[in-house]
Amino acid sequence: TGDALRAFHAAIRSHPVNSKNPAVKEQAQGIMLKVLTSFKSSEIEQAVNSLDRNGVDLLMKYIYKGFEKPTENSSAILLQWHEKALAVGGLGSIVRVLTARKTV
Amino acid sequence: MAYHSFLLEPISCHAWNKDRTQIALCPNNHEVHIYRKDGAKWSKIHELKEHNGQVTGIDWAPESNRLVTCGTDRNAYVWTLKGNVWKPTLVILRINRAARCVKWSPKENKFAVGSGSRLISICYFEQENDWWVCKHIKKPIRSTVLSLDWHPNNVLLAAGSCDFKCRIFSAYIKEVEERPSPTPWGSKMPFGELMFESSSSCGWVHSICFSASGARVAWVSHDSTLCLADANKKMAVASLCTETLPLLAVTFITENSLVAAGHDCYPMLFTYEESQGTLTFGGKLDVPKQSSQRGLTARERFQNLDKKASSDTANATLDTLHKNSIRHVLVLVGGKGNCSQFCTTGMDGGMSIWDVKSLESALKDLKIK
Image 1 (cartoon, each protein chain N blue to C red):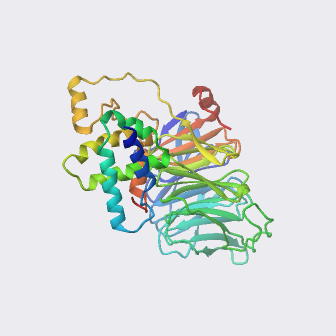
Image 2: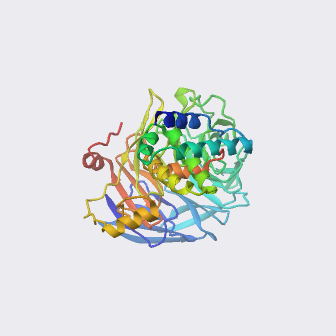
Image 3: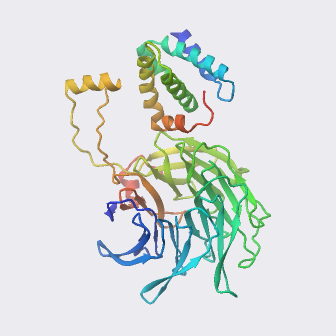
């Protein structure tokens, strides 16, 4: 669990928001999805609570990016993350996914 | 809280007269209706029909008792009360898109109109020709100007625009006023000078407001953020990402406290902490009476879990005073430095007056600094 949390924070910190390179963004998205999937359902809430406001906004961006290209099981896992992120970030965090000029 | 439902349609914009006995509003059409308070009721006493398009902005000058209106017909009218009739005077704004907002300057010798033409028209009265003329502020505005507010010195003007920026310009008109003395925003203020431009938001700036002293300016934008620039801190910008839907209106109620409202249909308090340069959420100002909570059946719980992956019991009806988005917030009593009453109007056609002292005693955790 400690490893997953560390990987999670590392992935959040190394976000490609300022990059214009689509390959970089694709890779970051893949890594984040792997990290999110590796969490047990019961650990998601704690992970979300360990983020600051910017982190929650970034997580929301990754979640919606993940919704765009669903795989076998990804949507169900992302929905669990979505519920916990929404509880902390509120609707405002979703609004900021929609209005952001710089995407992950 | 006193809530009055004026219409079934949105109130597009509104303004109050000096002693708050009359309200002028646009009932989502080309007209302006003026209502007068008669005890507990409101009676319509005037209908102003001159615009050929929806009226998007109304402002009522408290001292000279003149109204200025602007609309999607690209015009503005200054209205003066002659006997019992409001007489309009057309003001040529020289714009080729809809006008969106209008504000009298504090001394009421000028007014500013923001428009879709990506510029601000500063209008003043030319005595020799008995005619309102206007000057344009264009650079570097790149999109529709949605909101305006004047600095108390009658010269500086804050403008919020769809190009995501809050800007402060000088609207100094040498024909009607003396050169202004230096302010924390700068000393040289020729007409059109850009004194400040923000860079943080990612959304249309819906509403903008100077504090009572003019040293601070706050704005709300469509990315659900509230920002404040403090001229006494070298124009440092504090911003807060809110958990709510986008806010549409904001006003200062003291030098450190702001009330904002928007698509969540309730006003809320925000506090600026000068020493730390931070903005914090101070609480929801519309707390409904406790209504009986309807429990969910086991079947409904399972359906919720299956469809939405949540076990929430939140119901779908709004228990706020306003049943639709709040578009405007105006200070009624006390000014922006010591507001004791403010008013909200919205898309539900209703107008509500909020009493600050009552809110403070009803909501125990509320701290207005």
